[in-house]
Length: 311
Image (tube, rainbow, N blue to C red; front, side):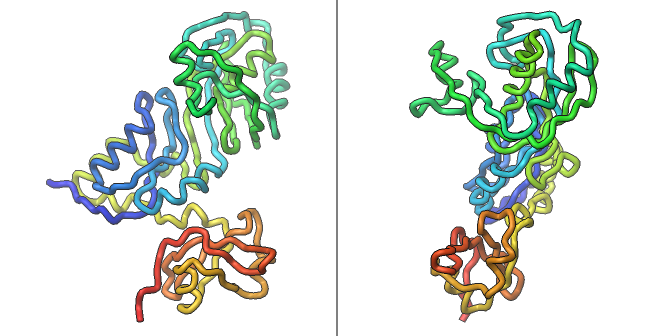
């Protein structure tokens, strides 16, 4: 059997990243097996974490910012009484406390305080940059820098189980939220210290772990040549947005990057898409993304994925 190589595939594969692998390793694997030159992922998972890792191929890499901005859901185990320098189990223990006096009622009350928009200090070992260098590089070099808090949004933080000293929670959150920092801050609030024991990403945007393909399954699909069946179309990432079918004439203008008018009611139908709309050809092919310019009352092409080349 031979691997089917297709270098013109555009879309997203929903991969279930295993514990122990880096996100970059999964990207490199897909790039090598597929032959697609442009491959990227939408949101790094630490090596110790597992779960949903959307891998974007070809023009699919151009929707990475929208996937990154989507809400995410995690299942996390938090170890009370143990504080580490990385805020998770991979680091060195720097402090130990006694969580034996903490009951479920105290825990639920503490967890409730994290819901909504909170201020969060990124972990020392994180990809947040200081003067152009990631914090994890500075930390590994023994360089201590001041870390500034940043807003993070937590939509839901549910206690699933509590078998002291391990707390199991499900977290639904927005872009840039560090679950390691939630564990660390929970320990500080409870007065016993804490760190992240394990983490599984259950969902990233519309991609759910129930539909994610394991790495062995992915390798098998490449080996037997049916891997393209696992590729989701680019526009699935934008399915919550307003969609419009445009004429050939309007489509040509969009493909040329020129502003267009899409009808009287198109702007009033916008909701939650930051004034964006997805557009399609009369045959149903995804053409691109346009953004509404309120001052000019026109739609400006933002990303074009198709073209009108026919005469």
